[in-house]
Image (cartoon, rainbow, N blue to C red; front, side, top):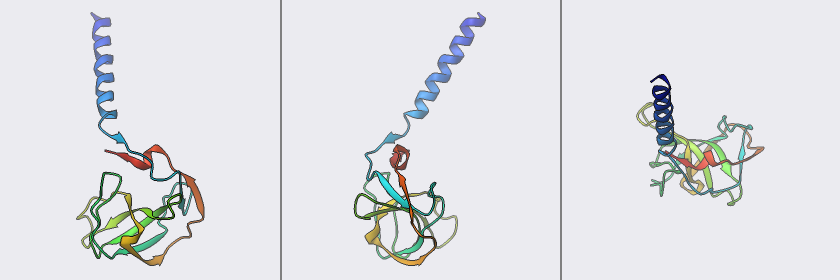
Length: 131
């Protein structure tokens, strides 16, 4: 009975783990390289302000409302810098959950450079993973 209970626990654990792993999905890569301030892309490159609303096509992108501040963490390289990745700062801190996602660079205007984007980093599947 001990072996059977142990096998049941392992089976249940694997089933739960599989369910968690399948909760998200891999989306196609927008680029193979990105420019960042550091090798982990953990420091913002610049601050920008949204010049128009942007409604995302899928979960790789973040919604942006006109006037919102956006902290840019990376610029995708292969697509002529058309897409950037960043997080939105709402007018009231905490109003929107902080989430990094992609958006077209054309929907924001650069306000203030923070760090130079001199580090080229290869993108991974996690850069374009959706929950």
